[in-house]
Length: 93
Image 1 (cartoon, one colour):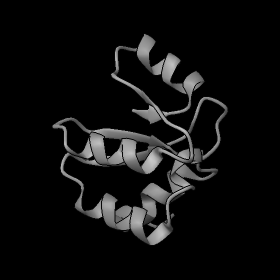
Image 2: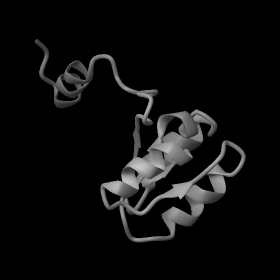
Image 3: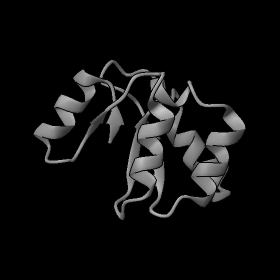
């Protein structure tokens, strides 16, 4: 998990390893995490500080996988998660 200090504290309570990053060092923290062997969670607020094309490429190629998740304040939460899942699966309702 790469996130702000408050979000990291919550995820640490859940047993995850965390790295606290700032907008200035998120790229460095992400590179370090990509060298590991565990899935990576990156909070949406920090993901916004990476160029969209670069982030999309990292998500496509990342091994271990990388997912962008909301932070503790809910920033980055999809307002229509069910709709996005249906569209991704090719199921329209």
